[in-house]
Image (cartoon, rainbow, N blue to C red):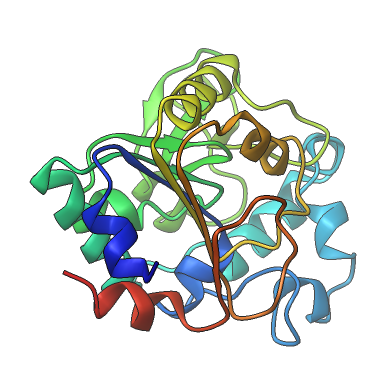
Length: 233
């Protein structure tokens, strides 16, 4: 079957996406040649975005975070827009994403499980008060709450666990999907990558620029996800 035939045969699509969905909006991924892991910093990026580094060196954490994790000018691309359109049509039930940029919601998607959190939610680590993204972007140094606590982005850092409610939501949606489309992810970040094994539906599709092996995939397309989805009805 072609991808369009699979879509036409689907009533409950779930899209499981990673960094490759956002790279086409100008947000670098972590592992490509131009990705964060290949940038030059005083500390390795994976060390900087760890919980222990945030606690021990928040000034350096926020310098890196503002510079390399927030892309305020990024806009949804054809993939984000198509998924939102499918949800509106009633054939896509959920988006499960490893991205933290909020572009799916910006495109119009409502039911989004953000496994790794969002740059748009920020909380005081002392009193729990909520702050928007502007609290980070419009401050310098270490952003602080009125109570004096450090404002922490609601993103899952290394050494931190995913939220149980996000895990449960993702597994529920994948278990109940008739079609699962995996896009723009190398499926190497766990536990998120392991959620694919909960799929028991009819059609499993993989769309990724580089080839990845996924057991049981009916269709594998090695191409730009924006181009592939943008050409569908």
